[in-house]
Image 1: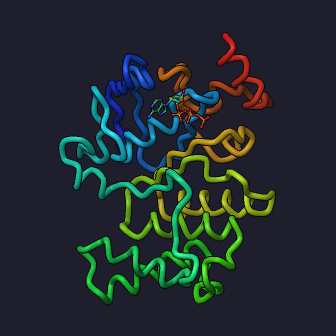
Image 2: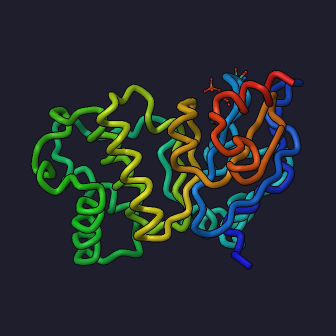
Image 3: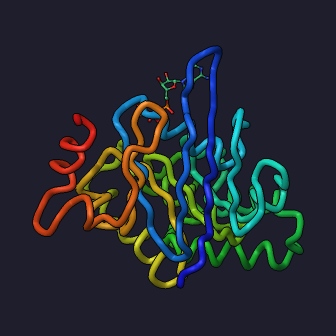
Length: 242
Ligand SMILES: Nc1ncnc2c1ncn2[C@@H]1O[C@H](COP(=O)(O)OP(=O)(O)OP(=O)(O)O)[C@@H](O)[C@H]1O
């Protein structure tokens, strides 16, 4: 049996009297790519912000490799690499310089291993050729890949991507898809990804968590929702309009 790497347990988040998330529960197994879906305003970003420690839930807990991101914040969060909002880089610094700066945040790394890590992640996201160019000259797709490189600096067990394909052109979307699949296949990375691009989700995800109005509406393997030959879009629309 595969090991659960992520366990989301009864997460509830209220703002004033309104529930943004209510009793959210699901698990993600090691090595899986899990898609987080839901209509606009369902609570996806709020959930990913709780998962990555950016906001505190009112109830519940999230365990990453058995470490609570709420009670044992440092250990829990050290297992996660994420792009939640658009990654912010210094435009007048090169990609390599930006990464080196961000690598300083990983205080467990020595100067030498920091340098090696930066080169390693640049290679993984295939930005070595442009690493000495200033970030202001990068396309959106390149900035997104630099964002993923940044997320990989701490050797996370889980990569969390919130709408990573937003604004990308078809070529950028394809490069991103290939990168996500390579991270999963070659490096065994577990990935949680939210997106409105359902055909992209259908191409890359094995598991799905569908939320609506802050609650889990459906969770399970992709093929149980979008049956053989069925478009995920049709299955999704059917599900959320029930
Ligand atoms: N700090 C906040 N205060 C009040 N309401 C909030 C706050 N943050 C989010 N919301 C509301 O919570 C709901 C869920 O928002 P969230 O951004 O998590 O949804 P989403 O599923 O990511 O939506 P989208 O697909 O449009 O990005 C929305 O109705 C939003 O307006």
